[in-house]
Structure formats: C-alpha cells, structure tokens
Image 1 (tube, helix red, strand yellow):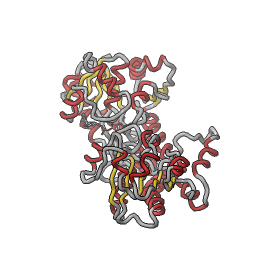
Image 2 (cartoon, protein in one colour):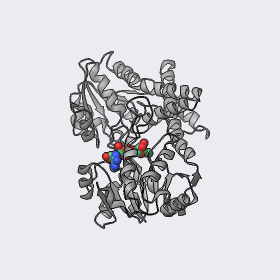
Image 3 (cartoon, protein in one colour):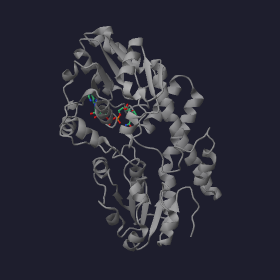
Image 4 (tube, protein in one colour):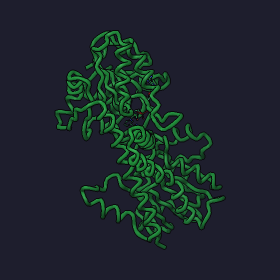
Length: 439
Ligand SMILES: NC(=O)c1ccc[n+]([C@@H]2O[C@H](COP(=O)([O-])OP(=O)(O)OC[C@H]3O[C@@H](n4cnc5c(N)ncnc54)[C@H](O)[C@@H]3O)[C@@H](O)[C@H]2O)c1
C-alpha cells in the first residue's frame, strides 16, 4: 500500500521504517526541515535498536522517504497520524493542537477515498472531533475514513514492538475502516497477533488505561519499597515473591527512580483528568496518588544518596550513570535521571553525567549539564557513582578496573542492575534501592 506517516518522532520514525519493512511504500512527513533532511540522508535523529538498519535498507531503495510538504502524500491509501500530544499548558489534558494542525493540513489534499489511522494518544472523544474536521476539510468528504489505532510500543524496542506487537487495537467508525486495518497490517496479523476491533471510544480509553495501569504498578512497588526501607525488608525479594502470582506478574514491577519519558507521566495525568471529567472521582483519586508517589521518587533517591555520603551531598562530586529515561533510548523527556541531577545540584552537589546514547539530547534539554564521554572518565575523582538508568553497559562495568579512579568508592544503584557482591569484593560501598545496606 502507499502509506504516509505524519509526525516523525519517537513513534513516527520507527513506524515509518517498520511499514516499509512490511512492504509498503512510505512517505514520512514532519514540519522540522532539519529532521527531514537528516532522515533522507539516512541519519537517524533518535537511538532505537534496529532502526538505523531499517533506514539503511529502505531509504536507498526508494521505499521510504521524508518530506515537509503534505501535498506529496495526496495519493496515499493510508495516512498514519503520529504527531505529539503533550500535556496542555493549562490543566492536565492533552494539547491537541499538533493533531488538529496535521489534520487541517492533510485534509485539503484528500481528493479520493483513503483511510486516516490515528496512532497518537488521545482522550476519549477526540477522534470524533477529528472525524468531523476531516469531513469538513477533505474534498473527498465522507469517503475519507478514520480509525483510531493506539500504539503500545516500548521505547528502546520500538521497531521490534511495531513489527511484533502484543496486540493491535482498532477503533473503527465503519466496516471499511476495519478492512483497511486488516490490509495494512496483514503481514503482522498472519503471524497470529490478536486484533481487537472495537469502537473509537474504547480504543482511546484502552491506551490511557494501559499506561495508567503500568504507571500504577511502578508506583505500587516504589511505595512498597519505601515501606521496606523503614522495615528493613528487601523490596526486590518481595517483588519476586508477589510477582510469581500470575494475577500480579513480575514484569514492569521493579523498584527504581520512578517512571518518565514522553508517555507514562502525561498519559497518567490525562487519564486522571479524564476520570474526573467522566465523574469517576475515586478513580481520579487513585491515579493522582500514583502520580504523587512518582513525584516523590527523586526525594527517595536523594535520601539514599545522602545516606551513602554521610548525610549531605553539599560539595560532593556525584557521577550519574544515565540521562535517558530508560535504557535503549536517547529520549530524556521527563527523565528521572535528569530530575535527580537537578535535585543533587540544588543540594550543592557537583554533578557529572555519563550516558551511552543520550548525552546529546540531555545537553539540549539542560545546556549547563557537566557530562563525561566515557564511564572511566565519569568515575575519576568522584565521591559517589549513582546508577540512574538501567543500561546493560553499567551492569557490565568492571568494578575492579574502576575502583582506583575514586578516592571513596561508593556506588548507589537505583536500578538494581549491579552485581552488588562483586562490587563489594572490589572495594566499593554499595547501596541499592529497596535493599538493606550491607557493610
Ligand atoms: N514515544 C513513544 O514511545 C510512544 C508510544 C506510544 C504512543 N505514543 C504517542 O504517539 C504520539 C507521538 O509521540 P512521540 O513520542 O513520537 O512524539 P515526538 O514529539 O517525538 O514526535 C512528534 C513529531 O511530530 C511532528 N509534528 C508536530 N506537528 C506536526 C504537523 N502538524 N505535521 C507534521 N509533523 C508534525 C514534530 O515535529 C515531531 O517530530 C503521542 O501522542 C504519544 O503519546 C508515543
């Protein structure tokens, strides 16, 4: 099929590349000329596993290209909407201006039957508004279909999750919308991936509910981890012991510095605001509690770091391992690591950050940030190393090789990725979030 992907960010680029991999001819559209130019040269502006390989394969073959000019997509059979829906400046709902602008720019080019498939995350009711907008502005009128097809990919695994999703959810206004979804994803569906055909309102709510639940699971174990700290209990063992119950499940339930990124924090807030608006006030309370637990994570991490440094971080040189909000991505939006860097700095620490992929985006977000290009350099002269992102490179670091670089080998592992016994053997004082301190 001839496919356009409108909005080439963390969702749109992997989606465009994956659609080309499925055999479609794909045009990615973005307003950002610099990004489009980079992409057309095969230079990927974000870090995602396997993404560069797909660009290398499909851009030179002509099956995938990028433009800022919406009129180039006029002939496409399918238009995916993948623009951003950040939190509104006032309140907690989504800001839908990117979506409205994208639809208003796309619609005048739609002169024949085609399907617009929305992938951005929205509040229940938004797709109905967009459908009306399309009918109003598209010359083809009602023969432009709209489907809402929320995206569940995990950053860091975006390509693989797009090609091998757990499920595809499609909220359709008509049978013909369903037919297009089955056709555009036919290769994936042949592999046995479940397809949920439902109403647009259900599809919109499925996405919000899924992320709200994932956020709740993280805040739950983080709240329990606070209890464990006071009780002298071990939150990791506890998580394993409760997670063995399939009704609970261990996945997505590791104590840590809180959730971040471009999705969970804003989706949780929008879901809570939506619950309020729909009159589900107890649900809204539950969601705001989840948000409060997450907001207190930098403070919980600070407690542990201050403990490790004898009570205060003032004047201490603290190395942060990690700037990305999670491993596998260069995305630093709402990153717990950067929130911690801010708090440490506020408390008088001299902070230096190392990350294998996210230093460029971290510097864009925090221009004054001190960074170190290598793990070794980051540790030199440091009073404490804090693991804030769960990169496998940090788990694989050799504590014996690093111990001589610091006058006071102290490590605080907020992600529980280090082999604590080995680090202790190498001479480090080790603190791990959720675990009792061992001398
Ligand atoms: N990032 C994820 O992992 C993920 C996962 C699932 C769902 N989502 C949802 O997908 C949507 C996009 O998220 P993202 O993380 O990719 O955002 P992003 O900010 O990384 O990308 C959005 C892109 O859209 C472009 N854009 C904005 N307005 C445009 C317009 N009118 N025409 C063309 N391009 C335009 C921007 O320049 C930007 O490149 C959001 O609704 C998000 O909640 C994201």
